[in-house]
Structures are given as C-alpha cells and as structure tokens.
Length: 544
Ligand code: ARG
Image (cartoon, rainbow, N blue to C red; front, side, top):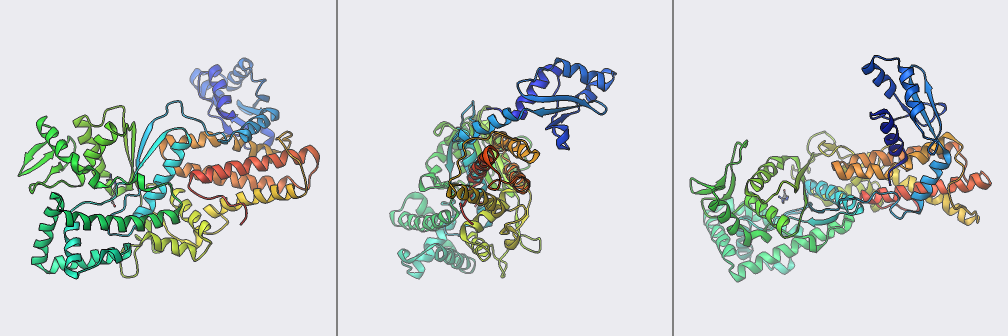
C-alpha cells in the first residue's frame, strides 16, 4: 500500500516527466500540497511558468484523488485531496493490523549483531546504545517481513580469562557465590595482581594455554564466569524490555573451532601472508593489516569477526549483516569487511553495514563517567532516570533520547529533561497515546458508538489524517537507511498534530457523524502511536 501523497506524486510525474517534489501547502486555503514543477520546467524550456502549469494541469486526470487542482501565483500548482479519499485511506489503515506498515517485496535474512557486552564486566553506556539501537532495527525489519537473526556477540574469549581464573584459584573463591558485579570486582583485582606480580602474570599466561587446549577444570571455571555474566545481562535485558534471548547469544568463542580453517584457507589462497611470525591480510587502502593469527599462534578480534562473517553468510544464510557498536570501531569493521570480500566470504550481494553511534555525554558535555572517573554502568543510568519517573516512563525517556538524534551524534544524558512529558521526549509520545486512550475510554463509558472516519471538514482533521497515512513510508525509510530518528520525528510531529487537532476540533463535545468520525480519527492516531512506539521498543500506556 502506497500512501496518498506518493500515489499523487507518481501520477503527476507520469504526466509531467519529472518529480513534482510535493510540499505540504503553507495555508489550508491552498489545499493540501503544492508543487513548483512548472517553474522548474519552464526555466529549462524557456517558457512561461503559468503556461507550463496549465499544460500539466490540462493533461492531469486526478478526479479520483483530488477535489481541486489549481494554478496559483507565478505558476505553482495546488492540490486539494478529496476528503472521502482521505477518509477511505484512514479507514483502510485503521482496519489493518499492521497500521499501514508496508510489507517488503524482497524479504531478506538479516543478521543484526548488537548489544555484545563482555563477560565479567557490567554493561556500560556503549552497550546501552547498541542494545537500544539494535533492538529498534530488529523490530522495524521484522515488522516489514524480513527474517531477523539477532546475534549477541559477547566477549567470552581471550587472554583475560587466564588472569580471572588464576585469581579465583589464588583467592580460593567459590564461583557459585559470585554475581556479575562481583565478577567485575574480581576482574579489577586480577588486573591489579597481574600488573604487580610477574609470577602471577606467568601463571595467567599458562592458564590461557590450558583454556585453549580444553583442560576440563579450566573450561568449567570459564563456563561459570559466562553463566554468571549472562544472568546479569539478562536481568538488564529484562529491565530494558528488549527482544534478546539466550538463543541469540553467539559469543566470540562460538568461532573458535572455525578459526584454524579460516587461517588455512586464507593462507592457502595467498590472501593471508606471513609477517614477522604472524599471519596477516593486507587489504588495499588500509594502513595496518588484519591480524589473522598472531606470532604466538593466537587468534584475536579480527580473525573472529572474519570467521563470523563466513558463518553468518554460509550457515545462517545472511543476506544483510548489520553491526551496531560505537563509532570508534568503524575502522575495525571496514577492515574486516574488506578482508571478507577479498576472501569471498562476503559476496557482493550480501550487504554488510556498520552502524557506528556517538557517545553519551554527561552534563558537562564530556563523555559520561562516574565520580571516580570510571565507566558508567547501564544499570546506573536506568536508576538515574527512574529518580524522575516510573520505570516504563524512565525507560521510554532513555530509549527515545538514544534514538531521536542521528545515531552518529553524541548526546547529553539529562535525566530530568528526557523524562519530561512535554517537548521532544519519549514520555510526551506516551502521554499523547494515553490521551487518545482516555478519550476513547470516556466515549465507551458514555456508550458513544463510532465506526469509521467519515466527514473531515476541518483543516486540522485533514492535516492529522494526511499525516497518519504517511506512517508506512516513514517506517520504510528507517529500514532502508537505518535512521530511527526519522521515525521519532514522524511520531513527534504526529503527537503535535494530534494536539492541535484536539484543541481545534471538539471530539466528545461534538455530535452525530462528526463526533463518530473524530473518535475514529483518535483511534487511528492511537493505533499509529502505539505501533510506532513499539518499533522504538517503547511501551504505550493506556493511562499515565
Ligand atoms: N564486545 C565488543 C565490545 O564490547 C562488541 C562486539 C561487537 N561485535 C562484533 N562482531 N565485533 O566493544
């Protein structure tokens, strides 16, 4: 289903041979849309704009869509839609369980790599953003009919496990008593120990070898640390109301068994070469090579991500892969994609994209830190927002703040501003939704019947109706361009248009057909707000 404006636009283009670039009319008396196409064409042709406009208007047959098509001023063309056509579009949308979200004609298997925290460390602000943004992509692409496979690429492998396990042994620590904050404390102690004690550092290195070679006790301790961490991550996910589950967890260690084969394959085909003991890939245009295997025979972050691409394409059937991490990793992903392309692991028809987001800043405009300069945990941010609002509202505030700016931008975490129910905030949208719900509740309590949108006489109703029909195309933009802020802008505008409609057009205080029609318009607004908020991962409350 295409929205009315896009249908209208296509019809004009078919006649005029150029995009009419329809703009909303500046005043209700000018209709609904205006185009300057005649002025543009006239310039090219050296003709009079009004003559060109007349020629276009004469050739157009828009009786089924428009009530009035007229030429204005120097040669603008104004269009006024038929209100019955507008009403029919809203009614169709109201009856559609998808609220007008367009189903893709080209469904793809999309892997989204997001959240991805690290074992024995609490999730921090970077993981907050990754989780919220990735989850929004998941919801939007799924809603359009794509098959989304979430991959939580947790950091569950690496040299740090040597020192962690040695520290457990040193302290005689009972791992069954440990939770995630406790594991993070352990990490800190182990790290300090490592820096001070050469013998401990040596034992930690040996422990890494034991872990790699599959020593049962070492593996068991490692598994426990993962389990403790996952339990902590899951508590946060639950608090954040995100889609991720245990079955989405595919940490770095998932690829261990594949690394040798990848290295051999790359070496055999001459894509990877030896360089002072290491196996590396020099990709054209990069300053540094990708390290496939270091000189000690170990595999790291680069190699794991190359193997992960191969697995995602070959085994998961990915046709598009989206990575959501902070912008500082953008070089890493560029390099990994380049290597995977060279190797043929990432065919041309599979799109790999890294969505790098900006930082979360504190009140001073510098990256947010704890009082003692440490990284801020995600839990503490949720706590801060909950000091100003109930949990569902605090969460809406954070998610909206995170999604409503273009992702690459840094944003200031201002719990007080974010949780306000006025202005461009998540709670404002929730409030607009609950207002719709309240009106419909009141109507039901009074036994007022309504069914469909019928009469749309007032400009404010028409404007609201028209905006509602554009929901689907706005969702489309987010899935094409991965720009959630455009959906936020759309919803904010919707709430604003609803407000001015409600101010100018009495609903419960009007009568008969007008009241019934306006109630249906309120219901259509509620539906789009609820669906739109859901795509952002935000709950739409019935009352606030
Ligand atoms: N664990 C990493 C971090 O905390 C993010 C991993 C992102 N995904 C990936 N495939 N490299 O920064």
